[in-house]
Image 1: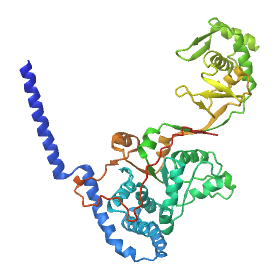
Image 2: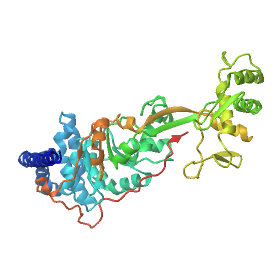
Image 3: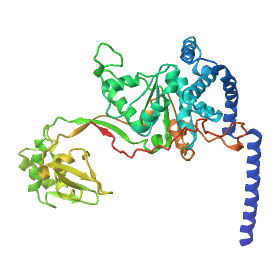
Image 4: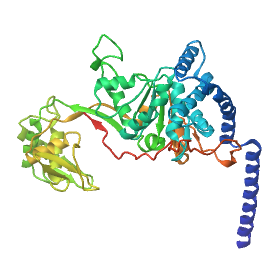
Amino acid sequence: MEVLEKIWEILSAIGNGVLGRFERGITMLFGSANVRFLKRLQPKVDAINALEAKFQELRDDQLPEKTEEFRQRLEAGETVDDLLVEAFALCREAGRRFLNMRHYDVQMIGGMILHEGNIAEMVTGEGKTLVATLPAYLNAIEGKGVHIITVNDYLARRDMEWMAPVYRGLGLTVDAIWSGMEPDERQKAYACNITYGTNNEFGFDYLRDNMKQAARDDERYPKFQQQAQGNLHFAIVDEVDNILIDEARTPLIISGPAQDDVTKYQKADKIARQLKPNTHFEVKEKEHSAHLTDEGIREAERLAGVESFYTAGNMQWPHLIDNSLKAHHLYKLDVTYVVQEGKVVIVDEFTGRLMEGRQWSDGLHQAVEAKEGVQVKEENQTLATITLQNFFKLYKKISGMTGTALTEAGEFWKIYKLDVIPPIGPCSGLSIPMSFTVPSGKSTSRSPTKSNDSTVTRP
């Protein structure tokens, strides 16, 4: 038996070796899918390079004129793909002229990957911020809006200010959105050709717009009643794995007061205090639940002064009383929550930190407030909600950049139908310069600090 196992191991090793060599031979003969994709873009890079000397002869005031020429060609029937070579060459010249940063050939490849609606795997130091200017400029010529999405407000404003000379030198408008902006400022930012911001800001603005009475620029309504965001045309997402995968199912929620009678929580609390455990209700700590028994329902009906909880106008009572029972028997003062300045503040069960501004949903927070005898606030209700995953699916075209996309390549394709194009390596067979160092010595990319702000509910 041992001899047969050894023979099988030897045959398996030989078979695997043969198959491996065959696979490598096929790859060498025809090239991998990635290499074939990159080789397809090489002629466009050559064509861009051929225009460099010609565009360097243009005066500064002629660059916006070229952009206007591109717009007229689009109106005449050409597509953005037809303009790619000239637009990329012009954007490279603007980068060299206004930022002292010249896009390298490999960055041109990155820009084409993004323009085609793919994910470019680019690590820190490869000039992601500069690369984004290429597809952003090309797609912004259409006038339908381009959104460049970063991980926090600081990066959105910094990247916008850093790259603004390129866009403005080409005759385009650019701005950024961030939390705390006034509605009129937000509308002006979205009216620009290119808008920078965070995923949460874009998502919340989408929700707000769906609650507005009028579309953008509908003069029949005042500005504050008009939508701000407009169409979701093209998005370029930085740290795309973090935003589209890690936070994909995070719901963005806009909530508001339910406009309900808050005295009902105090009445339910008074009833709950008079009920007897095991007789009138059962508490299951493992399941974190508390429920009235049949006898408890009859006793609670008597205490509430109603004939039946299951008639019109009384059906909220069982839920209110169950919440009050939970508040008394499952939620402990100075363990689950604390009372500060007349307010109930939740304690994070994992870190022990106070969670200011958070509250339990479905009336539970109000039940705890009634238990502690503090002012009972109105219960919030969800007015609008969407997950980041569903929001980004609304864009006509999305693309992204990150240094670690290959590990989630399957998820990107399954959820968003996005291909991941790995970095260009020495074995690619392409004669493309690999250095990303810019002539000025400035860095074309930074390591953005990811936002740890988990607040996704806004009033």
